Length: 320
Image 1 (cartoon, helix red, strand yellow):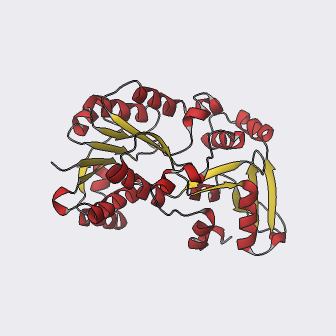
Image 2 (spheres, helix red, strand yellow):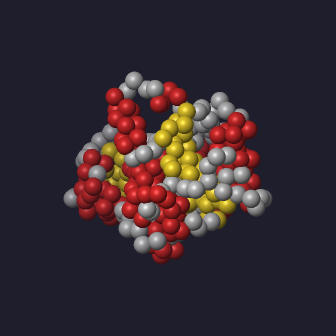
Image 3 (tube, one colour):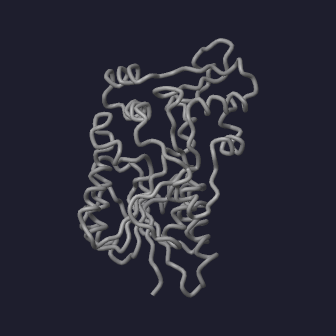
């Protein structure tokens, strides 16, 4: 009987994982033994009138991927378990869009269904080190998911700690690399900010690389427990140097430090702001970086994209 895989969601991470699973399967597994791939999508997504969405779904069908229509938010854990129970491996790519309690509900459903191997949505920082109380409990649910998985023996599980998505460093709302003209900084083109200090480091991985690594873990390695990926581990000083070199002129890059005191003060003014919570966590510098030498992509021999290659392939990112 072939290995059956269910991926929950086909967004920024779900799509690369689906494509990587299909591509690697066709490369290393004989046709008669290849796994079946299914993606769970909202009915509204499957029936979307959007031409771009239709093209995206058509590309998945062309890879032999089938669709399961379900609304995770509107379903109970028992209802989801009844959907999961026919699958060997379930991979959650739902992100945090489902709201509080969703990740626990999915983990409970996977355990109730007794799936053989579960990959929860933990594609981020090291929640074991950061803990449940950091930044007002930002990652409490993620820590509770880990406790739930560790408290049982029937279902194997793998948590893939990826650091932040590489592009997040350059999102204007995050505030690390931003357009200086929009901030009305005369004579400057780019502002690069250090969260906590220039020596603080952050680990990043692109969704495309995460897709390749997860596919290899599922189809080749089947490592269990917590594994780490690292497309790059970079300090804010190194990031500023890189941006300066790529932009071309030292005088048009302004460097600023958002220290912990400032960031905690900003969070105190708006304690429910998730982005301000994230900034505090990264400024504290615990559990947000690790060495590349210990990363799963290195152990698996998978080439990944560092920050410089990401920027060179995405000329639009610094086209302020």
